[in-house]
Amino acid sequence: MEEDHRQSLRRARLRLVKELQVEPLWDLLLHQEIFTPDMIEEIQKAGTRRDQARQLVIDLQTRGKRAFPAFIWCLQETGQNDLAALLSTGGDQPQLHPADLKPVEIRPRSEPRDPRITTSGNLPFPVQELNERRQKPSRDITATRGSVEENTRRNAETVYVLRTDPCGYCLIINNVNFSSTSGLSSRAGSDVDCEKLEKRFRSLRFEVLTRRDLKAQEIVTELQSLATRDHSSLDCCLVVLLSHGCQASHIQFPGGIYGTDGRSIAVEKIVSYFNGTHCPSLRGKPKLFFIQACGGEKKDRGFEVDSDPSAVESDASPIQVPAGGSDQTDAVASLPTPSDILVSYSTFPGFVSWRNKCTGSWYVETLDHVLEQYAHSEDLLNMLLRVANAVSAKGEYKQMPGCFNFLRKRFFFTAK
Image: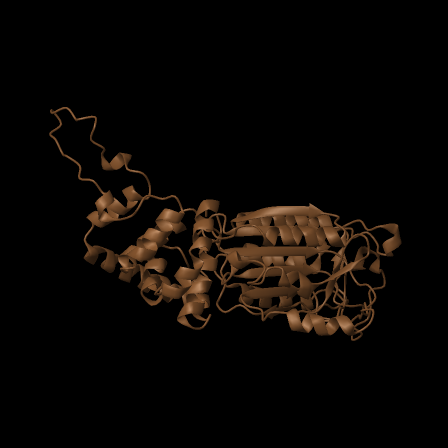
């Protein structure tokens, strides 16, 4: 949305909250594709009519360029002409009233056109758009709206709908070389993992962003940069973390990731950057995290270790105990309830995650293979079960992938 349109909404916020009738707007907002059904559902959960109006104004500012004129059209269609006029004036848009739509004289082709007459093709936007829509009978709009709604709602009830191309950003953070003071070894084979996932997620219609060898604060900066982007024209977001890992104190998502400087970041903190508060343009959309790192330093003792383990390494590191317990209470108080989030771990919390120097990690190698075979036909959770089953059967070192799932619907990738 253009900045002047955002300013117009902000200036009119008090009156919109006081007067806006939200109930008749939902179908039109859905039909105009200003919001998805999931987003409308989230707004409706805000509470009273005033609360819903306030949330609608906030969320509307995260939508695309056509959202503002389309919203004005929705206001007029529902008889809220005073509010439509208020926004038109405040956004330096022409008044959207029938009086502004001047009649056009139609002449035969053989007759020269009077250059003083303005045709609809020269009308300023959004007057031209409004003029064109007012030419159509309202029954046609109602009929179209019904069929679109029915199909959209039927699919959206159980499945996240991915319409855009690209469908979202995919950020891959690949930490290979660590500082000598960190006490962490280089992660040979991680570049193999990174290359596989870059290729795979591009084929699944993601715009891939790769960052290599980042310190802890640099990781935070990249994550916050991604979270503050405008995702309103995209359908989902994906983050891949390839690094050494550790256990960390948590409420919902266990584990931590190391930067190349040896400082760790809790997975819970990483996920929180993409919640509805910090990233409103991803509200109601799936946010996926894939983590190839250890959840601790335990090895599965039920099996004998290989006699020659030199080709296999662990991403494990000692358990990190927070300095003092006072910070834990603050973390609990500020942590929002997760929604539309899935975090896939390469290993069960507390255990190591194995990586081959030549072929990459067991988890990424298997994930890439499963996506190649089944992404066109199976949903994500079913594919992650395949990954867990295959990885758990590898070698004499044992590893059990798992996930924390807060998705509300089934997720299907869409291939090119």
